[in-house]
Amino acid sequence: MTSEGVAGSSQQASPSVEISNREGSGPAVILCEHAACDIPEMYQGLGLDPVHRSSHAAWDPGARAVAVKLSDALDAPLIASRVSRLVYDCNRPPDAASAMPERSEIIDVPGNHDLTPAQRAARVDAIYRPFCQAVSRVLADRAARHLPTVLLTLHSFTPYYYGHTRRVEIGILHDADTRLADAMLAQTHRLPHRDIQRNAPYGPEDGVTHSLKLHGMGNGLANVMVEIRNDLLATPDAEATMANEVLRLILPALATLGFAVPPQEGERDA
Image 1 (cartoon, rainbow, N blue to C red):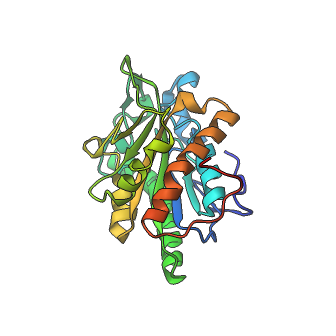
Image 2 (image 1 turned 60 degrees about the vertical axis):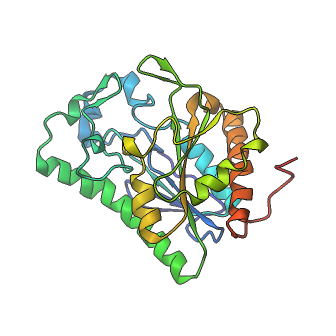
């Protein structure tokens, strides 16, 4: 995966983590745990069919592109994983079976079968810990600079899951801390053409709020996960459109919570 500059800078914390716009002083820190479908050579493709290595099972298509645009618009640091979530899902704790899934929906992952404790620990050390450490360093630096901060995680999801069609287009997800999610959901009238739902297509009961709890609630930060249906992210123009629509929810939500937001180019709420 190629590292691209965001708002003028991009830094690599480790081979498995990308940090962009680290010095950004806007009100948010953005995470993209499923930004890449890369499977390092040492994992021998996890035994997957090549088609599956680039499917939604391996990453969140379009999520990083939207995260980059939000990082630019919000002057926000962005921390993204460079490794497929099938090798290690950085939105799962090490003791979760789904951190290194043997199966993702209908796709079997042979390279994750019968992993030894040592093999699991090696992946934790190579992928999960560097990601968490990068997030912690960025948040600690912002705290030292007295920068008010919310945590935003960016994901995409497949429109068809186990043969069922998902109508929801944008999901606003939260765990026990609902502050930012509530503020964003209060702005859905700005996108009347979109099906926007709370805790859909996933919710806390599905184990998807690990990053929100660890990095957001664990640091007393208002936090939210945004899920975008990936058929709405099929082209660069579509990615730009969805980034703009997410901004139409999050900018007034941040203002409602008392956060100053960077000036935007043009009128987003016309």
